[in-house]
Length: 189
Image (cartoon, helix red, strand yellow):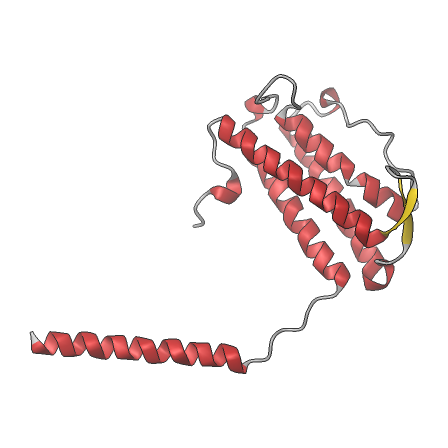
């Protein structure tokens, strides 16, 4: 019994020493430098895009027209709306006119594969615009089509990124109301 207690105390002591050594290593290592403004934006843009794409690929196709209540957009319409909104940033940055204002119609994107492709393209196009501008271009001025006023590229991008995040949150609710678990809420393997 005494040997067992000594073994447990010894093992715990070793674990404590390792934990302190690991903490010391972290404190002694200099912090990584901050990423530039365009990289921070790009990382967040791609993360929200990844989440929406995962949902688009995961949600059962037979439930794509599901609405928690009749007055809301369907699951597919929410994805089309969020993805299309990206072009209010991407188009002006690339020297193009923003979208006409209406979301793409569901009958234009009849399958899950078509919706997924549109969402992927919208986020890829936005990422390409961010990369093209780089840090120096984040302060370039473009016209915000909603306010008809000049705004910085970064401000427009962050605003539409927030918009996508809000729709991600709405789609989480769609999952839950439909009795499903969203991909980000599932245990990681």
